[in-house]
Image (tube, rainbow, N blue to C red; front, side):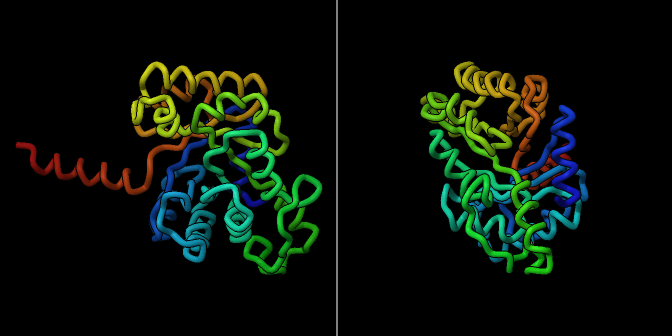
Length: 256
């Protein structure tokens, strides 16, 4: 297990929070800056971002270089998407739109080698140092990578107990914006009905000893959900953080 992933897991095991941004950029320099700035992890986005898997391996390298655990949000529950993300060295995968226990089980199976799952076997990949790593050490270490499931709608709430019972799941991630849409409250992530459903997931997961994460885009959200016991804090997006900084400079320059 690499150092960044080991430190990430140690913090969670000690009950501490970890924080990191979503990254949509194709430029590894932005990823590297995030790591040197002290983030614990980054979520490299292949669901909504424009970056190809070929380019993404350079972002993975940049994250590792700067001491940050690279998590790849895959495009869906597919063998190719999950396998390639792990092959290029992701410390874990984050799987969107998990709605049922069957979804959860399939995601785990595609991310893990036997005896946990049935991930396609190839050791001539970056994650195995292109076969330089002993094959058995690689297979063992590969099963330590993270499986993070995104719960984003009513169906996931209805199947929460069954999803939580799935072996091999490390973190449950609440997608507040998609959840708000499924409740007919698109974008209203602070609406009492949305907060109530989020708290329902947080409470149930904590009772089962499962780490919970969510997306945050204000400092108030960090305080609220950290206090509620959320440990995997996904704060904003690289382009959003850059936009905020740019606007702040413009405002300062225009003040009389």
